[in-house]
Amino acid sequence: MSLLFHHPLCPHSRFIRLALAEYGLDADLFEEKVHERRQDFLLIDPAGRTPVLVADGGLVVPGAGPIAEWIDEAYGPNTPAARLMPGDIAGRVETRRLMDWFNGKMFAEVTDWLVTQKVYKRFMPSKAGGGAPDMTLVRAARANIRHHLAYIGFLVSERNWLAGPRMTYADLAAAAHISVADYLGDVPWDEDELAKAWYQKIKSRPSFRALLADRVIGMAPSEVYADLDF
Amino acid sequence: MSLLFHHPLCPHSRFIRLALAEYGLDADLFEEKVHERRQDFLLIDPAGRTPVLVADGGLVVPGAGPIAEWIDEAYGPNTPAARLMPGDIAGRVETRRLMDWFNGKMFAEVTDWLVTQKVYKRFMPSKAGGGAPDMTLVRAARANIRHHLAYIGFLVSERNWLAGPRMTYADLAAAAHISVADYLGDVPWDEDELAKAWYQKIKSRPSFRALLADRVIGMAPSEVYADLDF
Image 1 (cartoon, rainbow over the protein chains, first blue to last red):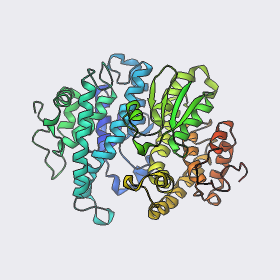
Image 2 (cartoon, helix red, strand yellow):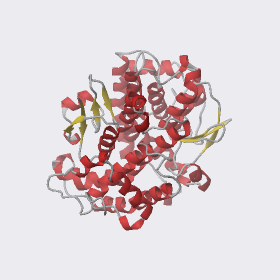
Image 3 (cartoon, rainbow over the protein chains, first blue to last red):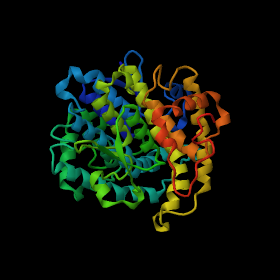
Image 4 (tube, helix red, strand yellow):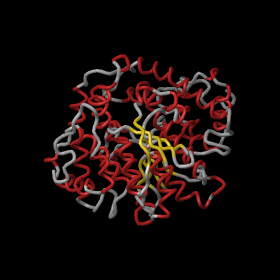
């Protein structure tokens, strides 16, 4: 059995949990508190951030992008119908562009601030930067998420899924980040009907169920979080 | 002929210029000032950052990671001896891990601060954030680069190149970031003999020549920048 070092509200970890489930792969989950900088974890991956996957056989695959590429290279050829990385060159470029968009740009402008300020800081000692959330950053994240929702709506106005006719890693990456903001009640769902319809579609997939059952101690999710018909 | 939107001191652009040269590919260069948020550039890639490659035939490939993967997928099979993405699964994981390390972690801790504070801000209007460098960030970058030099030294103490027995994208990514800091005089070369020997080896490659000829107006490079025997 492989082992995934993750955090329930780390969007990159959620992206990989979705990817594993879509490829039909099981993994044990270990909740890593990266701010503790645990020595045993740093020996596995000196970058010290989640997710890190230790595959069956011991291969260490660290980071959302490398894990996604590895899953598709290792398991995609045997499950061609379920592949989340397209086979054609242009589709691969578009999928990777949008993985970067959500895992990089949306993280930097939205989910990093939301999760760090509203979640991680609650569980960190004050000398490690813990404490009350900086609401300036939370408000900036809430303003920025509207652009990402609109971009999702724009993309699915022209395509079935974000990167083209089929679901890809781009959809899982976007949904992972949206799901974290949704847990925290920070998605303005009335702003974009197309983005909402896309999220309803992906949220209904079996791969999403484990995420919808996640609970962080002392932080109940928003009312709509686990509701498939929000 | 393909076209690369880049900036001479953008480390991600330099990484791609090295990759193109190693694969024997030519590209016209267009210097993009991303802070101007030029409409024609944003239509090509709404993420609005360098590098963006427009390939022969018009395919737009944005971002360092997607461009590197695309170059290897499109041209690697015809030039197997020059491939910078290994063929074996563990080698691919290690190469991508280290690409992320340098293009992500080292950028966030070192080169983003150095280039933004010392270069970009000189050419930006004050209302866009231009002005004098924040020396607190420059000093933090100068402290952090020592850890990255030490990590390079550690890796090449066990291997010929950063990711294994052959040169890979990991070396080009690391060298691109180091080269930007070196232009600005911010690499403490007396700190790690192994890292220095690795950089001398990669700096002597023909693919590096164009980078060593780069000059930013009004900012002379450090004395050792273009010296192969520094």
